[in-house]
Length: 272
Ligand SMILES: O=C(O)CCC(=O)C(=O)O
Image 1 (cartoon, rainbow, N blue to C red):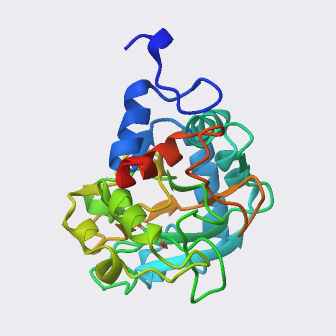
Image 2: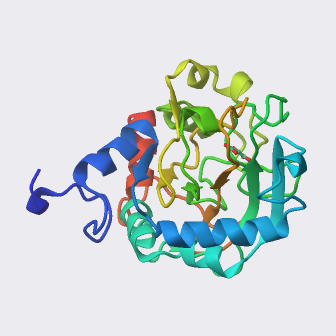
């Protein structure tokens, strides 16, 4: 399709994503943006994360758990990666310019998955919580607190490296379920509330260091195991907040004056 006939749900024309990518985000619930940030920056981030881990990159005997987490990191490399211009442009294309908040204060928790045949115990299908407190994070139909989910690849991730699993199109099932749920927010059990999502095809979030999967907040996903590759897998999952900030804001689907591809997905689900 030519540039002049670009798909545009937003107030401004997309600058990074193609028509096809925006269309796929709407129908599939995610799109992979290749080379969203510099692979050299990804390597710097991996090195910074290793320095926060109680493990040695060169000594496999120190890789003692299938998953280790770095909590509340705000290392300089990660902040540059999550604010890479190409990534910011793609978020604008899906959410709308000025309608979300760049991550400046911190990156969030970062899970690192190690080669292991041990069950890490955290591989269930879910959507990420958006607001409230651990361990009862909540979600609601407006997606308060979360404009998007990112899956950012800092290492090469192949099928053997425990890639994140995604249920293609599951955001539509979750949107339908949340449309009748308590607007103040619920803890969301996918199997109970949106079982159809689990029958959707599974896609693996594989790619190269620097690639980013931009995901609808309602996309059902899960970690996978075993990790039968040879090197630790670094994939960050930062939340992109609405313009109002952490735990605030939300989508008003009825308001077509301020529109976006994210809102269009929900209309598709509800046939609005
Ligand atoms: O590490 C992964 O592949 C996914 C982890 C995840 O979905 C989560 O921590 O919410």
